[in-house]
Image (cartoon, one colour):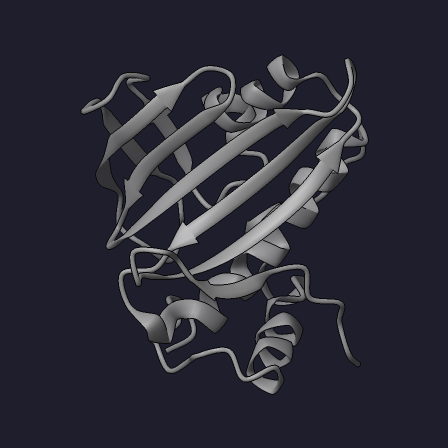
Length: 175
């Protein structure tokens, strides 16, 4: 069954590969900022629980993924409530928030890839995670990124493969 892909594979101006996703939420920027920065909010849709020192150079502690060991990253930039970026494994994650009127926010997630062959895998993973964030923003419950075999990750992955997005990286918990 085909799925609707919401991510875009691109090459940034500095030549690095990335996948990018954009959503608009019916919440003010400050509320969406808590979805991204509060560990209790974040763990409801993000692949890990992430506890952050919200300052450039601060530590980000990632815990709780059953398929990956806990690890740390480094905060790259913080501009509340508009921008947050940090190291995540060999990648970078950039969250950009833009007010669209008083009660809406455009949310953009850019996963700057350390390796090109992770694009399809990561894109599929973000589709599942962002579906959980979409549900959370609507006030609905969603099983999220750790929904196991019932998560549609494989369908999204196949969709990205069919679209010609670079692939080949190992898949934690499946390889």
